[in-house]
Amino acid sequence: MYVKLFDRSHIQLDELYQFSPPKYGWTLNDIDTMALDIALSDPKCTPANMQLGNHLEYAADDGTPIWGGYIAGHSFDDAKLTLNCVDYNALLKYRRLRAKQYATMDYGILNRQLIDDAQAARPDYPIGLTGYSIAAGAIDTTREVKATDLLLAKLKDINADANYDYWMDEARVYHFALRRGADKPQYVLEYGGEADNIIAAPTLARDILNLANDVYAESTVTDDSNNSTTITSEQQDASSQSTYGLYEGTFSPNDGVTDQSTLDTQTQAALALDSAPADSITLTCTDGTLCPFDDLAIGDRVTLHLAPYFDYTASVRVLRMVQDDDKQTREITVGSVVYKPQGPQRRAYAG
Image (cartoon, rainbow, N blue to C red; front, top):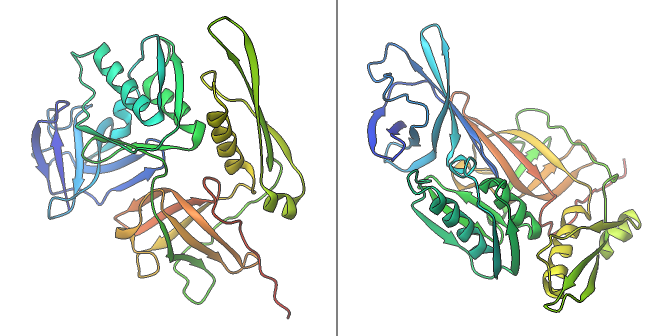
């Protein structure tokens, strides 16, 4: 493994080969971090190489990028310098949008337009994207942005409407996906079973206090003559109601919802988030055939089996991963909240 250093314009400055094994992560639809220690005595530990804002890429020996971002902070401690880095998603965080009313377009195209407009507002400081990968098939929407809106926060807000995913990869390509990741039920995160590969006791907390398995929404539509009508949508999860009882809830769509299909889609997305108990579980795992790190990505759905916890079994989505190259372990945060293809199962056995 080695580290490539670049300036803010992504012109390569140097390569690092002497450093402590780093700890770094990836998070679904959010920014994650890396911490990298280098000796102050290293001749490559110079102010120019370590400049705050410089790009940094952690790569395999063959040059394949593993993690990419930029240096956001320094921590000096005796003979070492810790580089506190944020991934390339942060390139979108500190850019302000300008007030604009967007015409009807699908969410993927709107994502690209927002980024292009933020870039056009300050062409003297490029964001640093190298391209786009925009999935087709998203629903249409309209949106108004204000001059006080920040780019990444607005992308997070609009994509949450229908549980769409977005991220910047190690090559600084911006991705928009209807759903990130793949279904990989053949991979099992297991604790307390015959093929245990979880090395620390996970915690599992579940409740139904925020459950909603019958979701109602309404939106006011105003035509060109300033006449207003109200459209409504009600979406239900019969399986959840059978298991937990009736839990009614409401959803407030954004102001740009003007047609029934879009309102139905957004209400269904709200139902998908809330129709089962919210599970978020952090596990510490070792690499192996049951969970090979190289074949596990953010957004993937795998099988989770916690034998001591009432034999809890569920298909869960990978929400965050943190790799510790020093300990050769990976912390994996999984949840059954977004896009649940099945509810969690419990099995009871006679003694």
